[in-house]
Image (tube, rainbow, N blue to C red; front, side):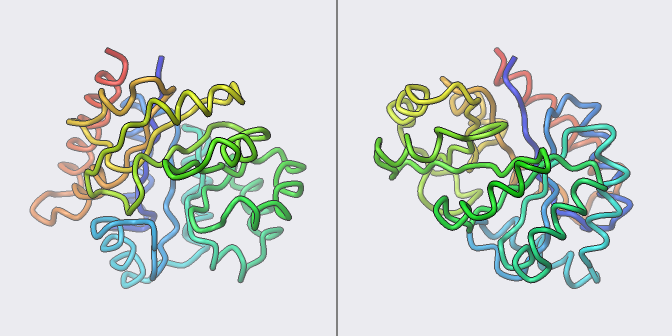
Length: 246
């Protein structure tokens, strides 16, 4: 069974909605939830997720909101915090680790923290039995892939193309998937550009997919009520989970 990881932006359109949406995604078959930490300059994300980030911040999002929501969500679904390094640096990684432990969160996805710069933080994260997800890009050499994946935990985030999320680009990933699996048995999940139309193809040869923009675009649809958004995203999650396991 291939896994589905779902990203949603914490606090948009509201914190209560985030909790309700997360619980619905768990019921819809999502295996892991990425709770996005809103940030003013989400450099790896496309316009859809960037817009949701900015709207959450305009609505008054604070870090404590992430922690509060996580405590309600994490008992029901495997939860990771996805965010850019600036907030982690300013609050302190030790503080984030402590909050993650008390919130029941299992680790972090930090897309703008390169492998080498993450090395000082790895030991303290792993000592707390948490995970820092490693990224592989299509441009990485085989030598670098071996370096990055050797000690990878939980899953490896394979970026489907060089660029930002949600643009729908595509690259031939089978050679890099083969290279990754030569050096590790850690599951490989593909992210960037995964939606109900692309999921089946993107899932080829990997252990799961990561979906963000396809869900967040529904969050941004102001013509839908909260209940309608939850129903639509849940149905989308079910459809994607079925397609990657056909």
